Image 1: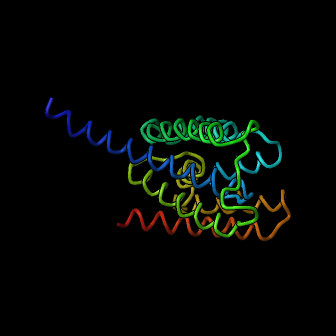
Image 2: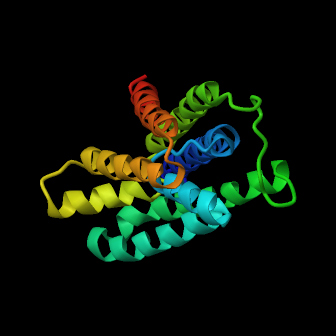
Length: 207
């Protein structure tokens, strides 16, 4: 029994950090950025674009995209890589449903809690919370799927690091938001979000 306890503690530690990080990321994304039409990278950014166009709940698009990516990556990367990712995707899907259900209106629309048109502070605060949250997820040896999987798959076939693969995918997703809004300001806010997020991830993981 004593030999099992360290392993259980490690699992509990990782799951706790992943869960806290996912909640923080979802708060930054749903409460500070989505209501202001700021598009971050990753699968949540792609889900946000679909939401802006169709009104389809973010959690639906996020879940469906990641299911497809998981099926593709499972064969390429193996089940061991996928274990924590599956938990991260499942819990993130739940949180992306729960926050709009609790704080949104009858249509799931979330308020602009910083006031109308205060996109600058929404971008800064949201990106900081998201970055810290993702830092906790990675410290907990976890993943929220999406471009993490894309980066790992690209790295498997090409001489491109996982980080570079993620960055390329995120830049493409953020850039695609211009096709929806035709607003350079929102594009810049998206790029700023990516820069702040990655800076906060590095800060948290190097503490």
